[in-house]
Image 1: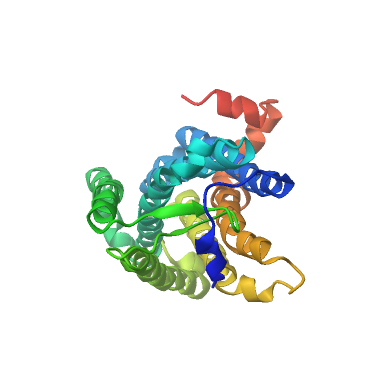
Image 2: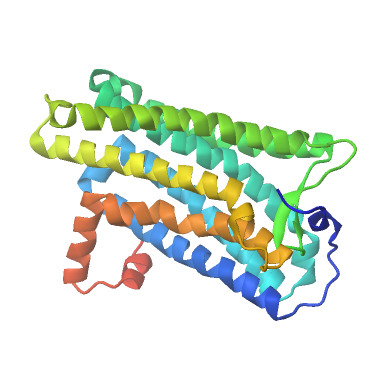
Length: 313
């Protein structure tokens, strides 16, 4: 996808105005994504309907998104914008955090997708499969396994994920012992889970379109409305994820030729990946009716977004 020049860029460079611009365009979506995620989590603690298994899984997915925002935003703030060379030279630490977070986030996406599929398509089994004890086990597996496995894998094979100044991009280190093993592993996890996500989201979408109000007939009107709304939210998040994957794969070829190579790499990798931080919470802001109602009530009480953030329990 990218030119070989990205692998030829060292850590010793003099910061210029383009470095500042590249850093700012990463920091802004990271800060916005961080604030929005905190507000959503705050709302989920207060909204009764979001204390369900769906809200539980979504919260833990947003915790990971917060870590991702802090990791990426912090690196580009201190390493690129403020030009702390120590941060740049140790970029593999930030890279390790990113590559550990990737399977964790995708696994939580998958759990949330299954949760909605079960709630709408197989409601009789929903409570049994997502009872509190089991959902804690699911989340623990999603968290613990990548934390243990990723560092061990990178250590054994001498793999890594490092920052390259050309394109301001993180990329896999191609070494004799690692080769492309690490990249193939992460891409494989991403593609396999992504394919299963599409499958379950498609099943949920078909159920919503074909059956609509006929699903969850044993539930009260209020509960049914919430469950259907949550299902719609997950489907929309799946669509956003699919659009992101398409842009990540093909946008490089779509950018006009008069744009410099390093900026083409940057816009279609670093910026695009960090811009996604906004959409996780953004979809909830726009499409989650329970959260939107809670937010309107806070606004009527003159509680600003900063006030919401500052009152996290």
